[in-house]
Length: 255
Image (cartoon, rainbow, N blue to C red):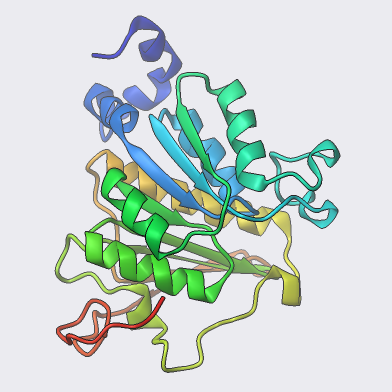
């Protein structure tokens, strides 16, 4: 049961028919891995901790730079040269003492995937590296762990939800096969504006909360944000039978 303090703290969420007390309990019992604690991982971790997600694992091997500060809102100039995951975990723990937060201060690899994925209920991919995206996508498919992908460059963003527990769910490799030219641009190559990251991270957080509370989430739908035009577009996609990650083929790709 929720404590009296929790009932007051999360009262605005609990009064929602689609969440209620059972949904809030589900959030408290949930464990989420956030991969990348940069422009997307900062607001996403804040929103999930504030919503009452019980355990957050924050993974990032990068250190904070001055150029990160306009969009990575947990950090300040005094944190420059410190590890992103360590600083984010410390600040979130201070603000949300009831949440268990663990920092993974290194880049995710296959070994870390094997250790953490069996422990978590879902993963948020907030990374900006295409090889990391392929790695976590393959690992989530293998372990049947839902994956919520976010990406943003310039004034544009995209979000995709993958649920390997659903046999009809396409994966990231279905959308961007490794054998083809996958999108490699990131904020270091073409720039980024902070609020676009906040909007995509908000969408990732919303999808996570819906999944964790048993609400319907749109699968096989790529959501694209055009920040200049103030427009969202949705594109339907299908699971590819020939996909070497989630299809019927026995082949696998290297992470």
